[in-house]
Length: 129
Picture 1 (cartoon, rainbow, N blue to C red):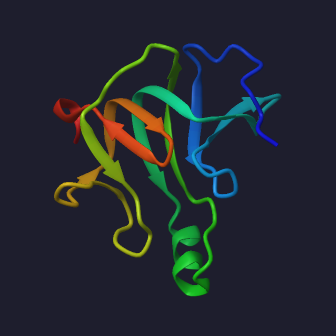
Picture 2: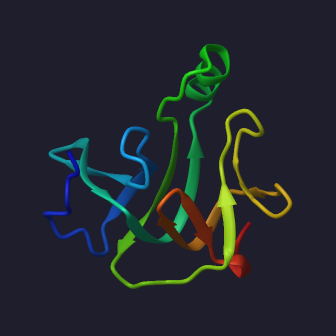
């Protein structure tokens, strides 16, 4: 079941990850009562001041078992402001232990703006580190 956004997350810190069961949707994690909970499944997510996290144990489990699991996240400030970052980014546990630019596979660890839409992710190119 698709979970629409029912709480106001504007300006709040969240984690987002590509939902493995709901193709084209992103799951949003938010701390509620001290615990991270999935609060929405959205087709389009905009984040500011983003850092990317890859949990190495989860990545190694994917490589070993050849079975997907959630272990890579974008941490950032949720915003309803629509941005159009131009640099396509991706993550593939079989290729690298970090997020990377699709164009040349150079690492991306943070960005000032990120748009997660469908099964794609884009970041602001001038602020990539």
